[in-house]
Length: 317
Image (cartoon, rainbow, N blue to C red; front, side, top):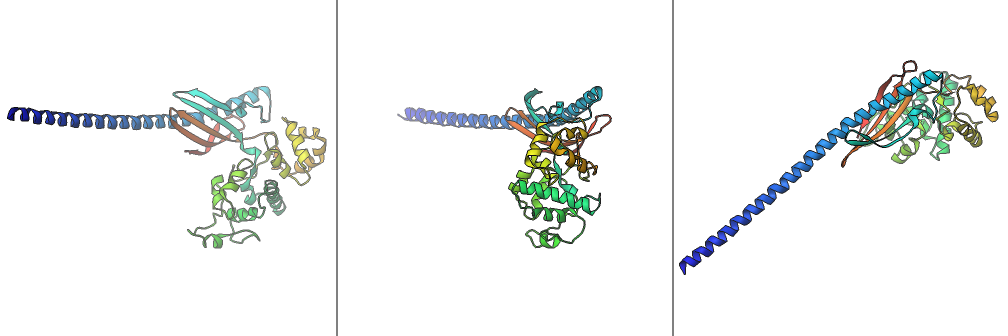
């Protein structure tokens, strides 16, 4: 009887040890799988990061190729049918899939023009009125433009509906007005009255590049709302007619739009009113490697002669 009891105890101990071993093996397997997934995720994330950088270089190459083609054909304009304007969707690059879109930043109103150190007071007022007209068209309070002017200009004298450092120092946390050009559109969220929704609604129509401002708008790529904001005499129908008549090879070529002839002649008196070519572009890229996705936003400046592009701004997330 005693031997039978001993055998029973030994069997129970054996089962207990076996159970513990199985539990340990399962735990080890789970840990190994978790580490493998983490290693795979790290690997895919690293690959996506490297491929994103490669994608930015590819965007530079596309702009250069487009410039070289224009040089061969003698074209001196940039329009929506150009090589750079063609979107890329799920293009295989390395182990990933690339989606990309290059846009013309010169087809937008430059907010840094609001306090650019170029032109006389009349020209500065004209630029402010253009941005206000765009805000009104987007159903955004135009008084916000005055707060933006105060944020960018170098003085501490507030506009009637604006705000200087005294206002921002009363906020929690307190901060000061930049009194400098906007480095990115995201900085608009720091300006009085600019909510994330307003910034998002503006992003399609405005830019901050180049930061020094003072460059004309490319009417070959500008949205009709941006075109309409250029001058109070440009109606919605004129803006749509201009958009439908693209591309324009020269600034004078726009005179074939009869209703724009007189307005165009007036605007051409100012060298930074409008143009038909560009040198600032933005590239939005997305790279997916398995379950890892990296996104990048780059601003590129293309040199007019060689066609080489330099990266002015780059953000990956």
